[in-house]
Structures are given as structure tokens and as C-alpha cells.
Length: 122
Figure 1 (spheres, rainbow, N blue to C red):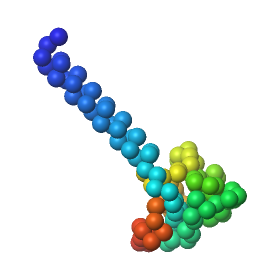
Figure 2 (cartoon, rainbow, N blue to C red; figure 1 turned 120 degrees about the vertical axis):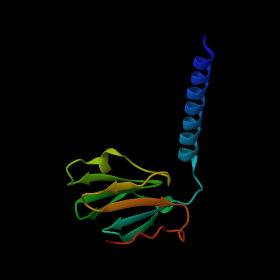
Figure 3 (cartoon, rainbow, N blue to C red; figure 1 turned 135 degrees about the vertical axis):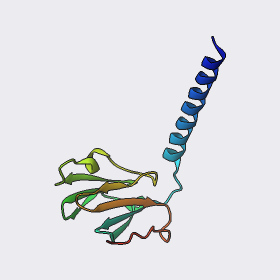
Figure 4 (cartoon, rainbow, N blue to C red; figure 1 turned 60 degrees about the vertical axis):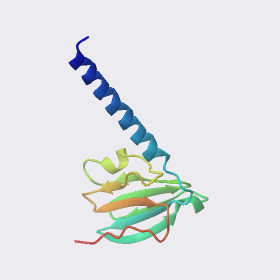
């Protein structure tokens, strides 16, 4: 095996290990309290402590229906054409938000009730 091939193989292996470690770290970020912040048109419309949810329920927004259950939140219906917000599935940590661009809805998770990321409206 050539030296350049070995170096290339090592670089790809190191990158794969780093990517896997990053994914594990982001998915393992669980500090206990989970606050879901639902924004519509850039305005905070609701904050929900997902760890305190005892019975699952839905929230209806203009164009979206959000499903809230213990520890996670998801969009289950949307009138947008691509339905990416539904396909994303439920979120249970702050690694990634749910975003529905056509309906201007964003759902973010944080682990601190006071640490809400403020989003400015347009």
C-alpha cells in the first residue's frame, strides 16, 4: 500500500470517528428539564416544560398541528407543500429545532426556563 493511500485512509477514518462522536454527543445532551419554545411569525407563543407533561395533547397553530408528549414534541400536520417539519419527526433535545418555513413556525428546546433564545420578528 502506498504511503499516500495510508494517509488518505487514516484521514477518512479520523473524520468518520469525529463525526460519529459528534452525533453521539449531540443526541446524548440530556440535562433533565426540557423547555419547548414555540415561535410563530417570530413571536414566542408558548413555552412548555416537556418533563412535566403527563398526558399527550395537541396545539393548533395556523397551518400546523403540534403534538406534545412527555419528553418530546413534534409537528403531526401541516398545510405546507413539502411537509419537512412533519418528516423531521419528534425532537427531545436541543440539538436541532423543528422549522416550518412556509408557515413561519419554529420549535426550539432548551434545558433552562430562563435561557430562552429570543427570536426577532421580521
